[in-house]
Image 1 (cartoon, one colour):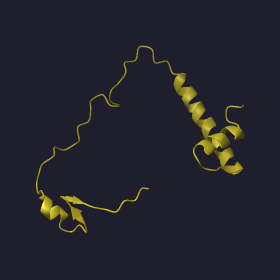
Image 2: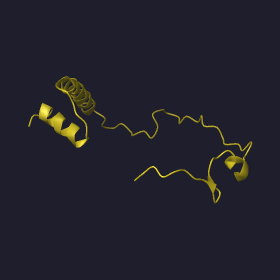
Image 3: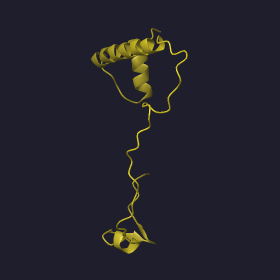
Image 4: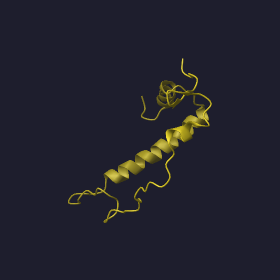
Length: 97
């Protein structure tokens, strides 16, 4: 089977439980081929002697603020507008069979 054949995409779509038209398959083929070419380009880059980076920047960015507790609701206030409260928790109808 060809790497990006129509059958390949139809089987993939079937496995993922959706249908693809022939036009959608052709568009996906183009996208997959372009992606494959980009990966091949990355694979061709000589990275010998290059140290791996943990962060994409030389210095890690620190922009996350410290958490500061300001106003905290107690359980009674947090649940006062709930329609159905049981044993201190919001009760909702079962939605899964």
